[in-house]
Length: 275
Length: 201
Image (cartoon, rainbow over all chains, first blue to last red; front, side, top):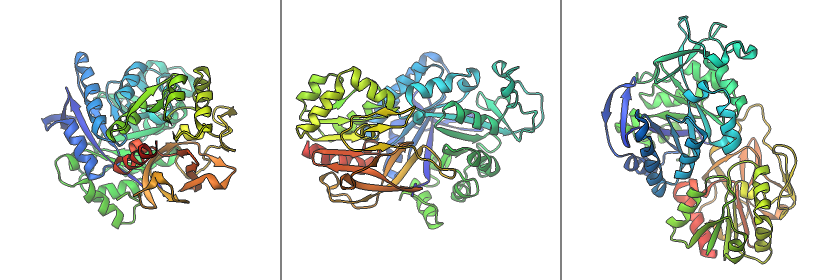
């Protein structure tokens, strides 16, 4: 039986690990390669680097981090953040990462996901979706989606519960998160990394309704993200939320729990887990 | 010298690094001559069947691989490198493979299972093979694939995995080993398999 996956996430800026709380108040906390080895030894099922390096000139640093990580860590590695071109994906894969996670570029360029999955295979294309409960504000609907009839269905006005945000949760995009996820699957996404912007950084638990809605609507795997504060939250996301994997940063990063703690807990509760 | 076949697709780097980690004498090449001169051959694989067989044929690697297998060189196929050994696949239309083994490569079809089959799943051994020396039955390995092999000859099946039903996750016949999972991504236990292959290579 396929095991549910536990995925620690490391936010990396300028080649160093950081952790944002609600994407603000970032604290420096170490070397990404050392952190990766630490999680590998603990039996993490995969590892994700979210590159939040702002300046374009420093973006190559992540390639070096990936390369060094891949020398010592033999588990699936995903890198997200700042991927704009197909060559960015190629460079990351060549450096030794297995999957790339794409957020804003999927929204800005309609064909990017299908082009990427055609070239590199859908198994390595993760679409990251930052979703927030739709409050009914006036949304900004991306230019490319306007007037494009079937695409108009993706607008939040048409009964959306969650809206897509980009730029670390600062920019509403006027797109229905659930319909967007379905559309991304059709475009060739191999997996969805679903972050609740309402829950991220709260330690209050995942948005279970959002997770379940997206996971049950799709036939590709869904990773729940945003809000993990304790082990029960992981359990809820994998059962009530029907997620295939859970991603968490601070509970592991600040050593509140080890990956082993999480796995033993989930195993005891009957979740299929690789111990 | 172990040659990892480069056919312009997939993540060769992690396969190469995993072999290097075991201290093996390994080289990545897309030249048929290197494949023919190799003591053993590794065919990794991520991507589409159609592109894989297309590239292997264009580069002249298909015949070099077949030749290497037929003269008894140890061969390790990984993921797509396993699927390509069969006669044909339905991925993006019907495409012919290398035809080393009889059988085809169907897609997982399910309304309840997530596809791709992505993550850690157990391999149940059907026979004792040197690749699994020191590895217990029923261990977890990392998978990522939407298609699986359906061999005609039951004898070649060395391991199976449950996903919806039972599918063939490992093949062993004489000098040919093939794995649906990724040993290079399966942490310590995956490296153990690579180490075992290096011993016979």
